[in-house]
Image (cartoon, rainbow, N blue to C red; front, side):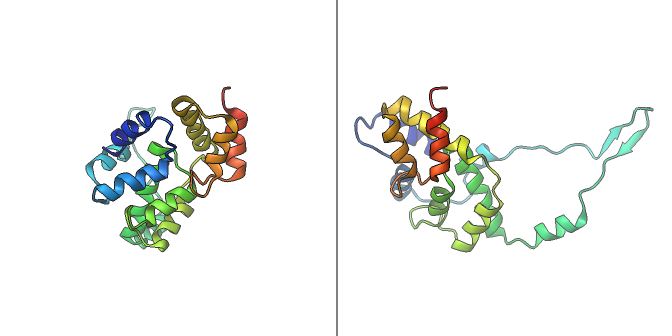
Length: 179
């Protein structure tokens, strides 16, 4: 739902400059924020379970190795709020191409999903993502839909009121734009 709303807002915004995070805040302030709503679950949940037994080359069945129990215990000690924040952060990174700072702000925003700063920090620290690729995707979006100059796009990518990418991520995006 949010993506549909964002697409509608961005495509019809004319010369008004909206950033991904400001649109999210604007949309979120008009609609109640719900952790783990159905749209987010559909966007982020995939069933990747594999059978515990696989056929061996000789035709017998071979049992798959279980993950180390130490890792499972460490994961069990992580509070549910932290795990939820990580899932939400993954969703923002994948579907909205947001920067680390924008995701952190959205996770903790009173207009966002209202996670604690500790949960947001856990999520950001445990989120493995290609932030340069996100900056490039965001730059391509600005170029195609808002017809901005490279300098305008760069400024929007690094602005504290814009996308909040690092200078290194924005440099990468601008260097690889139109390639």
